[in-house]
Length: 485
Image (tube, rainbow, N blue to C red; front, side, top):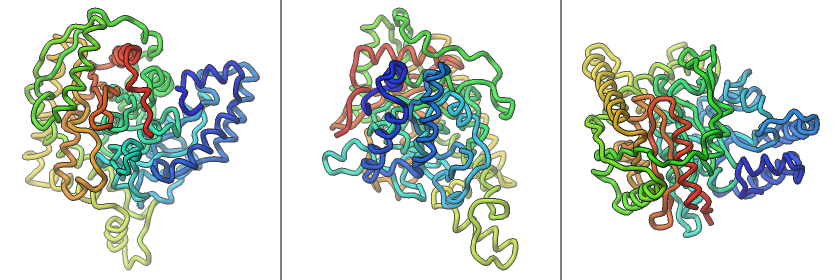
């Protein structure tokens, strides 16, 4: 059962070959046995999962099932879950138990899905390696066969590692600058970041509010489509949620790709891109040509400014969002504070990790008097230029394709002491968040036994087209079916 996709598990449950309780017990047993060496989960909700599985079996017996009824999955530990700890990978929220569900959580609950627990992540989603979690680093299941410990990417590294290791068939994730696509590429799974506003952010703990977006991770494009069917939609509780119809994302998966116009941004096939990674990506693009697509080179002239703009805007918004964690209302509080100021300063000094503190300091500086215009305002102007680059490109082509990451998964600890080198891991992904457009990463080969991801980028609300392109590629390749030893 662990090797089956969400779609296949749904069919097994529908046929009655297995019950949800049996399926959940199998996955829980596998998860508890295998996750010791990966640390992909922060919390396992065994009792709740079995109770939900029992309820799912009753729903199926009553003929009230959805495709998700009784199917196991996991939530990234950034989505609030009523009565279950939601830590965001931080000491600051280590004991926080929300009294409500995030909209994404609520939607999966209504669909009858069975949540097995909460996955590990970089603290407050700030990182590219899932090494900054208060609960310990997550290990990429690829490379363990050689005795190596490599990063799974971040910040959604726990979700990616769990899906890659077959601990769950699917997991929710979030993407602020590449946190779905980068770990999907490094772990060899399929992940989608939707258009900004397509998935509600209500109950999703904020990092950078104009960039954060909830999304999907699974082994196949079809499973990502099934997840987005549940997650997408208008939510009046989220002021950034967009009120427009939600299509059935599975309906167009089988459409042929003949005539699809693919653009290759020349800026994304340059610089520090690993040559072997580039060859795997170009090989994948040749498969698209065999499927009837046409390919042309395009330009994103302001691409080289994306990292600089992102690392002003994102920390600035983080500085504002994380000001709420002060020990006064909820979360961690220092012991025996002398006065209010002592409580604030020691709570934040003790409760936040090094990377979170670094970004708060950068963001506060960028927003401070005398520097706001020079940094934050300038970065927002650059953001508009980057957005325009994509708008212009999509007048010429239907989708853009590029590598997701400049290299395969690196070893744990290799870049921990060099934040700038770590930030450059997101060089092909941050511009997509600045523009607010959708993009996904699809397994597209291997370099030295480690997965490589193909990034497919689309115009606003073109998730169905991206999923169709990914699904058709997965019908003629088997990279997404490869399993780590």
